Image 1: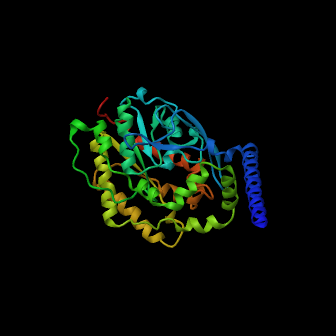
Image 2 (image 1 turned 90 degrees about the vertical axis):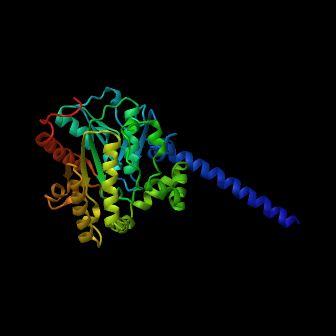
Length: 353
């Protein structure tokens, strides 16, 4: 009995000392490496209408585990990464909606393509992008309109790696509910959100990353290895059948009609699978076909693929490990978009002026 008690006491002391040591180590990591502090990480949430937004009125860090970047993210009173108030917008201004590429993942706000484009055009460009999909973009546009945004000219950044989904067909929208709160609530859950909710591993990683600086530090050291080089070559292994391409292009048509936006231009963000992995030929066929479908549906399309490939090293526009655009990628995109808009749009009479 004494031996059992002694073992229990020793085990308790071990657990207590280990807990204290881990607590002290956690504090030390947060003090020495504040970039790994979970309290400073960018946070997103779904509001009561199912709109994915950034945590309002916050400043957070966004860092890459392999050390590609460490930037600050300022989220405004609406949950957007934009210093401008959407209520200031007019029918002459452009809006940008898209996923993490358009959000400016990994670059400072002034270096992302929407901000660079604003300087090139000499007129406001509002960015309401959040990492989501076409359903999420629809909700973001409606949310911005409800908060006073005048959206008559919209750039949609389509990420070919993850935006193409089998979107649920909905009834044709009627004009009297084009921006109603009811319409936002009636939207289905996005495929992107469903995939995240089903992944136990992803949720566990998110749980640890949001609470432990130690986990973030160890994760960062792990990602500096060549493991990511093997992982990145798996991009593109998703369902991109003709049905998915048709569904995705139709979803953009519904977005344009439902939100009553006269001028919608689609910006195609090429997939890295065009240059990595074993499906390059198939990915190129998918890319070409989707652009065709968009044009058949009447969308002006800015396809960045030929411009990125013009220098014969398209991956130079991406971070080495992360895969998102670096500053050069955003600048190249802004240059192409600005040239297109100057030639095809800025001198045309516009509806809603």
